[in-house]
Length: 151
Image 1 (cartoon, rainbow, N blue to C red):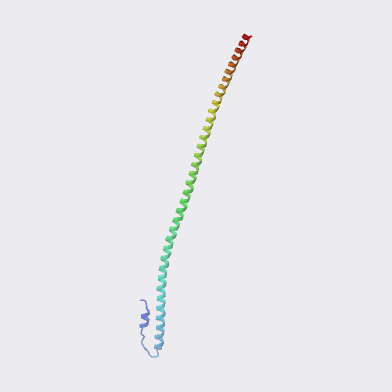
Image 2: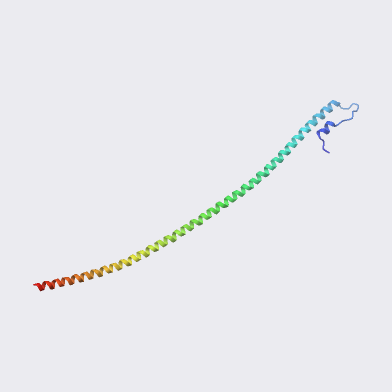
């Protein structure tokens, strides 16, 4: 059985011959009861404080778990973003290479077409020159014939 401050205050002792001084025992019991009451109050306060702190620790541990999960998620998202950006950069470079190759191919084709056209035009120029020479030569011959006839 647990003793309470009230048990101490209500405790009565037999009076015996040559026993302890009743007033002194009562004063001591009052002091012990008061001290015990203070200790019980303090003990109760400490238990409540421990409960409150345990709840706070649980709350903080839950918050820590949430923060850890959040950090892990953020790291994963960061890695995902980096990987996505790397892949997009590779795609952009690949597309640029394809476009550059197409532009180069088109330019080479156009140079080939223009070279072919230049060869044709040069051939026509030679042909026209020869035709003009032949015409001039023919005109000169005709002029010489006409000049000989007039003399």
